[in-house]
Amino acid sequence: MDGDGTLSKEEILQCYEEHFGVPITKKEVDALFAKIDLDNNGSIDYTEFVTATMEESKLVTEKRLRIAFNMFDRNGDGSLSSDEIKDILCSNGEINPEDIDKIVKDADENGDGEIDFEEFCHMMRVLTDMTK
Image (spheres, rainbow, N blue to C red):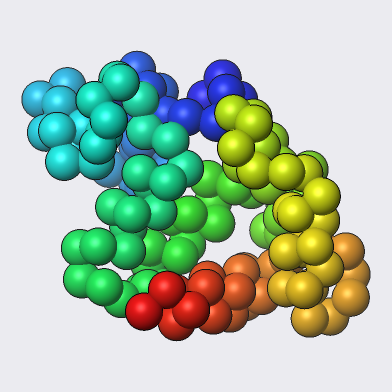
């Protein structure tokens, strides 16, 4: 993951087993991209990733949330700082960094300045309910 806010086929091949615990083949990555890369630009951006994780069953499951959380938690400390979230969501210029600060503040239920997995789950379920 090169920090550009998108996932390339190469990045998926390199990191899939590390993040998901199972290896993936080039053929499987091609099939994945055929379904998820909606604009066919050769990379999966944040919107495509969220759409793919939400659309399959229209439910936000703990497994999917854990996968998403682990992708954001770049340093692996079990919590998300606003900087980790900004690294992914703001790199392409579509999302304002100040908006991320507000999201983190709103989601940070225990006031420690970071989002733990439980807070992340709550935040994503609220966001999912808002889009129904």
